[in-house]
Image (cartoon, rainbow, N blue to C red; front, side, top):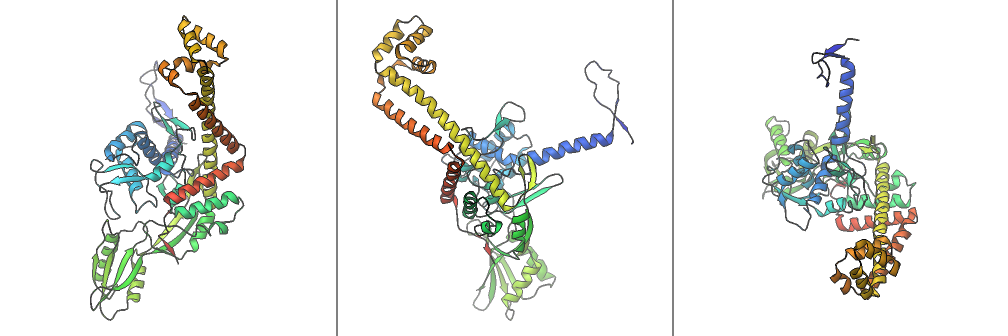
Length: 498
């Protein structure tokens, strides 16, 4: 095999004129694999648990860390982008802002995660520059990031090792199915359709209660994708294939009504378009077809779409032409009927896998079980620690004068600690807590208040122990919290299925 010499910078102590022979094929192979690994795992593919790519996860985590919550004011997107780039995502501000914009677009996400203020673009035009737009987290994003500070997920070092970032978010709902995902990696790609949150949660709960549920049973709850732009799914055979194998295709049609546009003329009024198809594209295509005389019967076309009323394109017809015939030609010759291909590739346990509907739901269920288990352990430990301190205070508060006398009569804190432990039979932690507490707080404490707090803490510990005692109890809690998410965020289906 041919070997091509490659100049390599000398190491300390080496002859500066030394050239090392490196096999080009091996170097290219190793470098390409490193690049491919970086693109697949660090940029292009979502995690099947929270449905987020690293840049999206970092945006949500950093905005939450900045306090940009729904009850706070909007801030410039440039500020949030700068924080994300400087602390977590060193890949350029353009990539970060593009991801932020997409998470704010109601026509891209079935359940937007960013609450945007300003021009965040349309299907036909890009957004304003990040120095002009403002943002904060949407309420749905709080369901993704909440409880990440309760040891529910693992954290790892950021790119320079100075900060920590979550490897995955707790995610209170199946975000990957609800909002879908697109991404092009090296040698693989993903394209997942958005779905209706209420339907997905219903299917998830059914799978929790019936682990051996068939795909047919799950599809009674999730009959197909639900695009934020509406439309109608036709030729739906590919949906079942996609849900079974992770790959499949189906066609989506625009929603069109035949109406009188003038006293004498009828017209086609387009109010919904296939996913990711903008009205300007449709108008231009129809105009080109009319000029080329590939379609007859159209006298005028007007785009009345706007940000408030949504899509509205009026196609005025000439007298003597049947609206249904013209419409069929429009479906055939324009993107008013478009094919959507599902390629459900996501990371599971650090590996890219092609997943069907049941597998996607199961990965999320397993994730939520782990989140609730870890959260419950954290809360139980925290309550038990506080309970011990309250019990110590209750012992001391009975004879507060004696406590003060011991502290005042001691030479130093070590002597006071030893005397308190001996006099009240306290633990080291309890004694340290009492000594660290300002005297004014200690003297004002009410025995009744402490007893009430102790009772509440004991109830919390008992409840959490019961929850952690069996897998079934945890699954029931997962279902309960999914119900809460459904009540808060579920909306009616927008895409009809023929």
